[in-house]
Image (tube, rainbow over all chains, first blue to last red; front, side, top):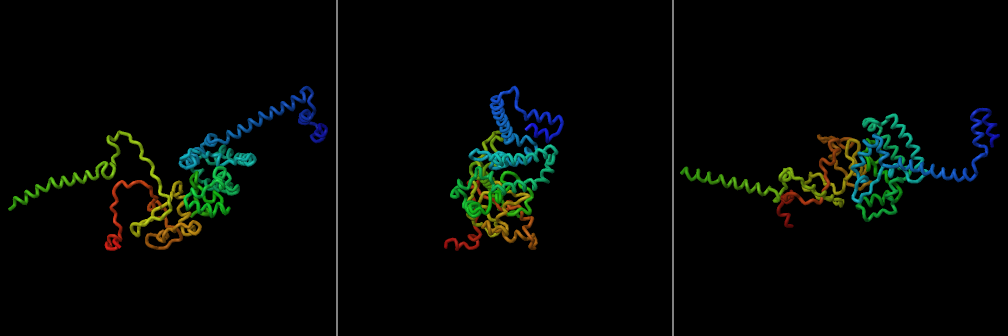
Amino acid sequence: MATVVTRVLGHSRLRDWVRQAFSPARTLSLAFLTLGGFVAGVFFWGGFNTVLEATNTESFCVSCHEMKTNVFEELKGTIHFTNRSGVRATCPDCHVPHKWTDKIARKMQASKEVWGHVFGSIDTREKFLALRKHLAEREWERMKANDSLECRNCHSSESMDLTKQNPRAAQAHERSLFSGEKTCIDCHKGIAHKLPNMSGVPGWQ
Amino acid sequence: MRRPALLSLFAMVPCVFAGALWAQQIGGPGRDAPRLKGPEPFTRETPAPPMQRQVTDDVRRRRNYPDQPPLIPHSIEGYALDLNANKCLSCHSRKFTEQSQAPMISVTHYQDRDGNFLGGVSPRRYQCLACHVPQTTAAPLVENRFTDMDAMAEPDRRSR
């Protein structure tokens, strides 16, 4: 292994470091390295997940004023914030997938949001409103592509009792949702935040 | 001859006052409409009245006169109605009534104030809630003595 590395890298300081990394340990036991590596892995993984989950909380999201003064304020008046049964859908419940791979993919996309925060792309209300349609369309597209997965984490069609619904709602769900013709976000736009200018959006005048 | 006329005029004065007092009592607290001035004394804090249940049965209500804007028999909680979006029109505008099976907004909504037809919903008709309102199950604050137009025009029809 070491010779392969030497051949590839040629003569440099980097080569010395790499060669050392790939040669067998001289003083540390195999048990220390394997078990120690395992324990270190547990701590690393635990720490990674803790940080990941910490970024998945309402308080983390609204620690940016862009979120706090715009979208979070709008959420406050809606049924997903306060309701008769006291269940609250916080930011990640709708905007971050639950499955690990999807979650990591979404978190990697979210690095763009950090960029936006650092460079102040929506740091005033005016800038936010100007970009609002673009931002909303991205989110609608995402939810359309995953068949409104985040909605269905709580509102699954299997557990939806149409007889408990208003006849008008039951008919609409029967016709569009259960037939698979439409997904939640097709009709339920703007249920948690205010809407951008909806001209040109299908289903809106 | 003059005196009795003057006397009767004087006698009328207390009657008029009594009538005014009586009318005030009718409108007083507890009898008819609630006080509009708030609690008595005004520094007293009273608990907010409970929110009333919305009527959401989707059953059309009869109009009391032909020009009356139809009432909204469903919940409109959280419906967007601003410059950016109008949720009402997503069901009630002409092009969406087929999929929604909702009543279409009347033809007058597509005309300007002079009766000229426009390409879309008239801007002056955009604010639906200026005329159309949902209902709650709240008991009326005052007795409703409204008489239907038909009853006034053809009283004999009521008995039929």
